[in-house]
Length: 120
Length: 117
Image (cartoon, rainbow over all chains, first blue to last red):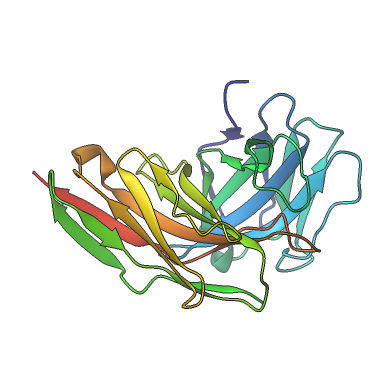
């Protein structure tokens, strides 16, 4: 697609429910990233996918959070048993390829518009 | 771990004037990259400008330029001839050049820029 697409744009859920957020990266981008942005804060790294390699899950805040990506396509971020502190904007980004040590145009992260999650 | 600090939660500028947004960072690495992203109300993060730490020359993109002071670990953004469309949150971000964290962006908390007509 022309850009990174995320759905839904907004999600309201009740505490304790599971939610699934979707990210559709730019076509051909092998790397995909999830970030969380709490109100008034910068972005926090959550998880990173690169091709078929094992993802880097080091930023996931708890075992209630998980993410999947099949190949170089769509990714889903799942939050189980949501809590009020999970309320945030969840942003997805993709880049063409990860080349260690370069800031070339291939490694620039392009962001979607995010999903605003509100847990009541 | 690297940290990025933006000490100005809010700034305002008159249309057509110049404004400078501050950013400092803390790192023990010698090679890294710095970025300024813009986030309008639409929420989509847009890359404004980037700087490679090994380059002494400050990056410039049209009305946007940076003042990169490596020794002081400072990376400020200057917006010249400010336009109404420049109103947004601006985030400073750091990325390692190599190693385990070289794909993660570490962000500051942002500066909200208002442009006064």
